[in-house]
Image (cartoon, helix red, strand yellow):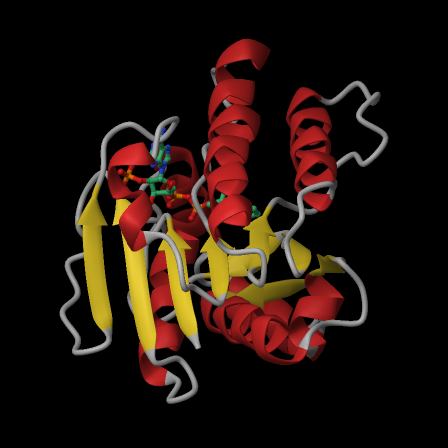
Length: 219
Ligand SMILES: NC(=O)c1ccc[n+]([C@@H]2O[C@H](COP(=O)([O-])OP(=O)(O)OC[C@H]3O[C@@H](n4cnc5c(N)ncnc54)[C@H](OP(=O)(O)O)[C@@H]3O)[C@@H](O)[C@H]2O)c1
């Protein structure tokens, strides 16, 4: 299976990249990012790209792919709705529209988050924008779209977030997360479980398009 990965430098993307490189069923991993992941591996090829609203210069590299794991995203903290929507909705759709045109047989997996508002009408700005993004992705002509909605995620294998807010949060929660996970296994997921679940959904499918923490851990 040939995978395209967005957000490989981030906390979730690093975890997903690790699992893709370890899994023999994944034969090639192509990353597209503003910077390199820092990993080297015979299966890995990385494309540096700056304009995430225009992929015309790299379209030649973006076909013949089986799945896209879209782990790129930002926190809404400190952003206006317009600025948050530009990265969360507009950028994601720019990539997804290009990919669905070039790869009609592709499975597209998007990381949104627990609490995402599918009605698009709620009062919480980030949840509404993620809901609009999810709904727009579902309308694209992919083979399948999976919407991963993790809540708390335990970063494993030395992985950290590139978002300061998440780094502070996870440093503070660090000692508590393994206890929480042991007591209530479905209260949170890990970067490893999320990566494995994305690979599983792309290869075998999943029972439904929207996957909450419990579903992610059970895949
Ligand atoms: N971490 C969590 O606990 C958690 C929980 C639920 C949902 N999520 C969601 O999962 C997604 C990823 O979270 P994360 O924790 O992995 O974030 P992260 O560590 O901050 O990583 C974000 C990734 O997105 C890329 N990115 C951000 N803005 C970009 C832009 N304008 N153009 C190109 N690349 C851009 C970053 O690339 P650079 O390295 O170039 O900046 C990085 O690879 C987000 O949508 C987040 O809301 C996260």
